[in-house]
Length: 277
Image 1 (cartoon, rainbow, N blue to C red):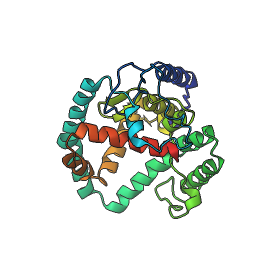
Image 2 (cartoon, helix red, strand yellow):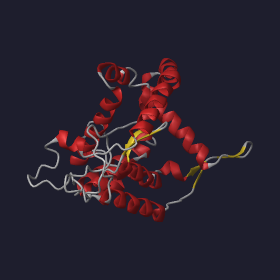
Image 3 (tube, one colour):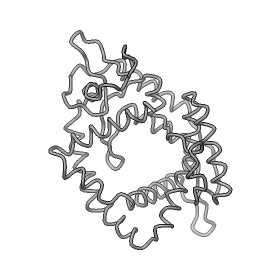
Image 4 (cartoon, rainbow, N blue to C red):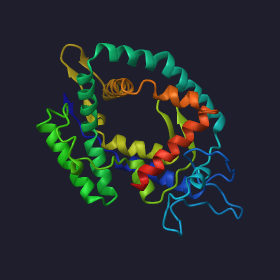
């Protein structure tokens, strides 16, 4: 296994600038039930800034925040929602169900801990970007301890130590921390719900993800591309994580009058709560 550093911060900054421009010039169409997306235009055509709240509580009015996210491509998003829904029931759920039967729970927990530990550098740098020094220290210590005493992260030996378990941070949250707006709500095939800001953030996280630097080399079979490695790692992680949550998606979907709106609003509220931490 050969580790290749391929950080592309110039690419990330281009997309960040694109996200900033999109926030500064949101669509003029107001969405009544908007998803995680752009700021809603007020009557005087001034974009609503969810981070500019005179009361000091940027997240005090969740209904107002939900309306502040535009969904101008709802038709596309609903199509992708149906696509991902079918993909879940026809492929992901059967595979994850079989995987759960075959793979013992302790092994699945270790796989989950391994991938979580592998993403430690992403969380560490995002803590630094936000000036959360204690959280950065906790992430660094957890990564070092679990990578050594935890056998490359297969065991989370500091699971019960609060100081080693700060809130999870990603680059989308970092952009939100600096008051960059959501942009429009987007549902991507395979990857699910997002916003323009979180999509840009995922590119930043990709640049910091150790898996992105990995390339497997096999002397007999030849060289696997890093793209193949990423797809395999992503697929294993998704199937393993889904094996712990079978039934959650179905419960929320069956309880909702409009599943699309329910999942959209749940996504927005979840992202708001994470940024507010």
